[in-house]
Image (cartoon, rainbow, N blue to C red; front, top):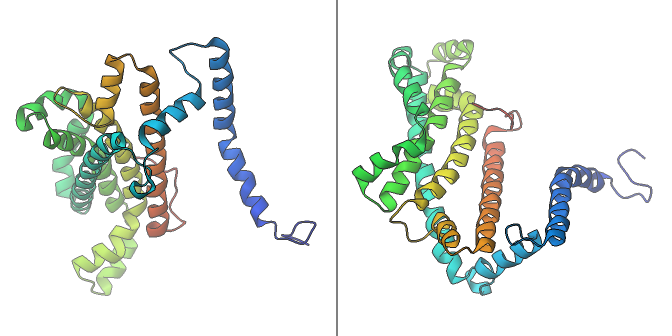
Amino acid sequence: MTGTQGDGRPGAPRATAVPFLLRWSVLLVAVVCWELAARAQDSVYFPPPLRITRHARDLWFSGPVGHLFLTSAAVETLLPSLGRMAAGFALAAVAGITLGMAMGRSRAAYALCNPVLQFARAVPPPALAPVFVVVFDFGTPMQVASIAFSAVWPVLVNSAEGARATDPLRLEVAAVLRLTAPERLWFLILPSALPRIFAGLRLSLSLSLILMVFSELLPGSDNGIGFTLTDAQTRSDLLTVWSALLLLGALGYLLNTVLLAVEKRLAGPRTSAGRTA
């Protein structure tokens, strides 16, 4: 029968498992090749992935169950970094969506602000580090401000473009129905702009992770993943360096997966996951 296996069981689990295995096959092959090559060469600079994973587990995820398996080193390393990243990303998201929607619905505001916007987004984030150090001094406020300022532009640009792309016919229907400005924004403009907004949020999330690490590499930092990288490099602890890189990759994948799930829930299946700025 269609949709069932030979023993009569539904074929949906098999149909779901095949794309899952294909999706992870390239990574699995790469890890196996790395493992075999690293064991053959026995180089201190490129340890085997299994050894890196065991070291990361012992370093950060071998704590008690009551602490969600987090060790004291994990609390000192992960939580400060995630807190700075979450604060910077939240500020960038709120400011970018608010300003972007306002710019996108006003032709005059868009024409006036667009040159400044294009100039500001073209400035490399590391080049602004001295400015933030002078304004905020070293510490968490400087790190959060640098993350928020540099991560706001993808959200702002995509929100503005999404608001500008609202179907004019729908706006005319809203005018005929005498919807108020807040009602048009909430029921018409914002849903229409959601795909572009989430495209900007995904870019902003990636930037936030990168800028979080960069801000913790600067002098004055005493905790976080970036500080752990610098400290391990100073001590020539290459195993911890590789473990931190593995942790950053896992965090990036996990956070992007969560954001995609939120996008699917809010924007629906019509949103294209591959749409970019």
